[in-house]
Amino acid sequence: MSRQNKKDDVIMNDDIRAKEVRCMGDDGTNYGIISTKDALTTADDLGLDLVLIAPDGKPPVAKIMDYSKFRYQQEKKKKEARKNQKVIVVKEVKFSVKIADNDINYKVKHAIEFLQKGYHVKCRVFLKGREMAHPEAGAKVLDRVWPMLEEHGIRETEPKQEGRFVNMYIVPTNENKS
Image 1 (cartoon, rainbow, N blue to C red):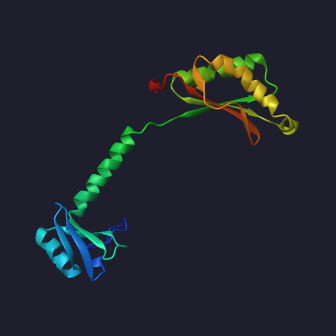
Image 2 (cartoon, rainbow, N blue to C red; image 1 turned 90 degrees about the vertical axis):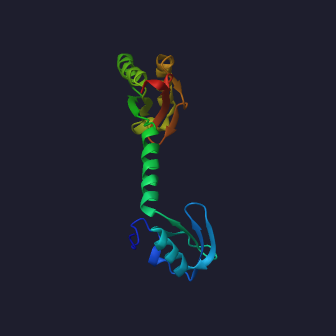
Image 3 (cartoon, rainbow, N blue to C red; image 1 turned 180 degrees about the vertical axis):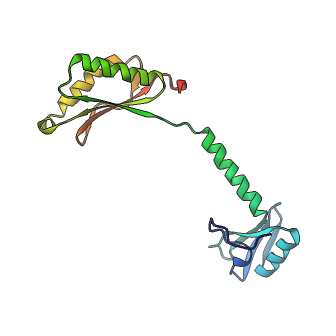
């Protein structure tokens, strides 16, 4: 077996500096508190590695295991978890305070397409210059937009000011379409 420190900072085999360790086997065997030298000999006899699990313990806890097999199983679990996670795509639709009705209809049409594809939509109104003094004007624009999107999504947040923007977040009603 390899007798080097792995790149993920696991202390194992000859790198263990403690005089004695509380040793356990991979199969559940409890060897009790034995000297590190004896634990290494036992691991070598079994053709396995001695891996320090709890280096802060008194005495430190070590486990006799096939470390390469253990790492392989950990990587496999990570891959499986990554495969099962769902990616949420957030599309952004920008409006301005002085927007015409036909422009609102055009942008709402795009927002509806995004919601039907299963994307989350962030509607935001950019406040320019003096409009910052009246953020409620941005909220009014989003309040005009919401009735057009109501049947396609669920409003997660009411229009609220964040910096130079007034934002409203909408999630699709049928989440399963992504």
